[in-house]
Image (tube, rainbow, N blue to C red; front, side, top):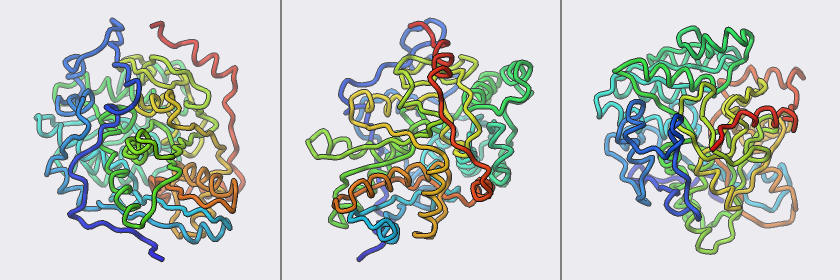
Length: 447
């Protein structure tokens, strides 16, 4: 039995797949935060380069990957597709479990798949500096790696609770030459306003985005880079699923269940979206997007137009949301603590293509430990959510023969303080209550 299915360097996809073209019912356009009218690329040009905006609003099914991006992708792509035979044995299941190992990138996660093209298109248009936010730090690490490759400066606003929980992600960001500070900070008006009202706030991705966008607006040499949610990010991540389709075919397999963890939605979309045409052609595939019970955007949120940040400075996106003022509890899956979901993923949930699932923190760490002991790789807390869902599916009927594919979005070698707390019994489950949801959604804009 082959454990790893590998592709050659020459088989790196040369085009990204744009699922927005194929989703039934399409996507609603972003709206101007002031006029509430649909936005064209010219309105977004102050914070994004036109090369990325063309991808964001593209009506092309496939988009060519520049050679300069492919050259850097080749450092780690293609990534292995691995049969989790030892996990199957530990579970006693007849299901076949495969995972796409995105942890082999230089920064240890899938995030580099979008960071590299974002840095490239900014550099190509003469941008000298990028500002961004990061939750768990994986996106901040990826963008700092990418900007170092293209000679750009980078400033990262890292959610305060993760800044304190994950000090070595901060070290990695600095190693690649970027600047990183905890958010909210005193460097921006948005940060100062939040600190004045909530001095002990753990921060949120919505706050960090507000700071990074303000930073970009305040300097002529700076653009903003986002690590998830937007269409162009999901498009970049499609290399994951495009490779996985080819690898499964090499193994003589087809996926029955496809699973990814969902925060902003990019790693799930990256694996799942390239299988959408197969689904639309009638193949029986279940897509499962897994999220924390403490941040249940898809399972409890509302499909509506909402801001991407607390300061209401971003375009309004039509997405599942918990409300832009949502402040999540300090769970250790920092990359899954965002109030909104990618419009692309939201549309697939709307069309009942994707099944949302919420799981608790402790069961995810339990799943991560089992996976590490079975397969040898320690998963990031975010990735533990996908593993937990794969275990649920594989053990629902131990005699059922099916092929399960999940995205191993990142390793947990810089998250060991979270595992320390898990083993010490210091982690807890969190539920997001209906009362909290009602309060948070009360601030949705009236469209």
